[in-house]
Amino acid sequence: MRTYWNTNGGLSTIKEWEPNCWIQVTCPTEEDQQMLEERFNIPDYFLSDISDTDERARYEYDDGWMLIILRIPYVKEVRSRTPYTTVPLGIIHKRDVTITVCYYETNMMIDFVSFHQRRGVGFTDYVDMIFRLFLSSAVWYLKRLKQISSLIDKAKRNLDKEVNNESLISLSRLQDSLTYFVTSIRGNETLLSKLKFKLQIDELDADLIEDVNIEMTQARETTNIYSNILESTMDTYSSIINNNMNTVMRTLTSVSILMMFPTLIASLFGMNLINGMETNRFGFIIALILSVGISALFWWIFRHKRLI
Image (cartoon, rainbow, N blue to C red):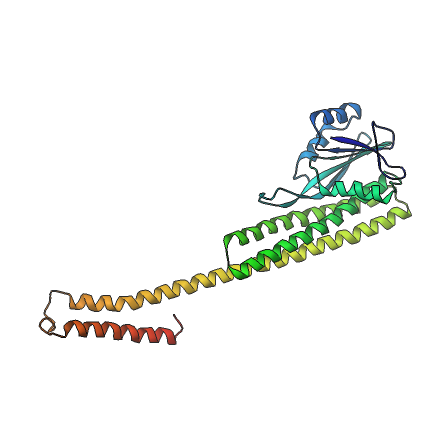
């Protein structure tokens, strides 16, 4: 799906391409890709790179085209192994043509459009638009991090009640998400530092870049904090599980030892050997008292040693 936006004095849709408009391509079809390649001569390899979910943040120049890949946050379906991840957003510019391409429909781009429509102010030029996309991505990283923090707290509350596999697995998946986040944010920061020296920046752009740097730094530090907290939490619950397992095994071993003495005494008196108890009318009672007494003695010893 492609949308043509007039960026002068706010964002408004137009029916077809005009010079200096913004072409937003979301979840491109084969027709969209064909149009981009044939009408605008966009390098086909770059479109393939954007479709690769693991493509790193970078920029390059090819035949006059400035080709940028920005990593933005993306939320997968609920049943996904990694609910929060990042995807590439392609930014393409050449003279009077500015195009963004994303193979996923993200809340960030929807909010980016609606925010500037409510604001009623467009973009001064393509440089302003690029850095505003950087700023929007940093803000959305922070929003997703707040959601991840809530999920971490929920899982920890569940684990406080009962240590179960479901909560531990959810924490592990959130750890994967934070790994994707911190890697993508660092890549975006490196890309931003390079673009500052490659694009023609005015005073307003410099102020915007400073805001982007602040938001990205906060997003990176917040991601590191949550990642450290999550790692510490996983280690803590892992230690708790191991300690509980050791306690259970110690208890079972102690019970096995206690049950061994009645079995041993019964085996000794049950042998086909002369032991003086064959004709004793109290033989069974004596064997029973010995079994109970010895078991009780070792039970007291184990309790004193805190083995049970």
